[in-house]
Image (cartoon, rainbow, N blue to C red; front, side):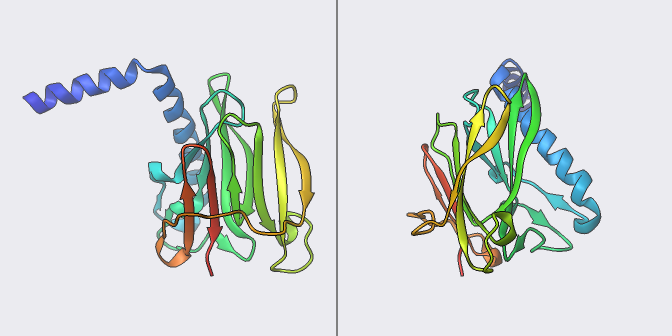
Length: 189
């Protein structure tokens, strides 16, 4: 009986927190879109909460990057890995409604909280590079008037995005650096 009461109280507290509800709306919209798009290829598609990386591109604090490197596709485990990196999606909460604003294969990204910039490392056709292993840095800037991401600059970096700490993800070789200020992901070789 005590456990049931505790669960009810926890549910009510979560329902009373508009920020938590908005965050769940963004994650649920991203999950639903992925299920619709990839259900046939994957069979079972698992998108845990750890696949959602909090960023703050719009200044509203409810934006997330969905890292498909952290998801599980039962029929094709490497569906989102390729020569151009891993698939990432940027979801925002616009007027309390979730919206996908960027879908891109990347080697990595960095976003400093409270910044309107998203710094990415991309390969090949994603950014106009000609060689398969050529990395280019694409910096996106959130434009509040247009309510969209714009490419601010694009160039060949001298070094890939830094990854000071590692969190390995099995066969895919994902390494990650996580802090309260930024996220960086790269595919290890």
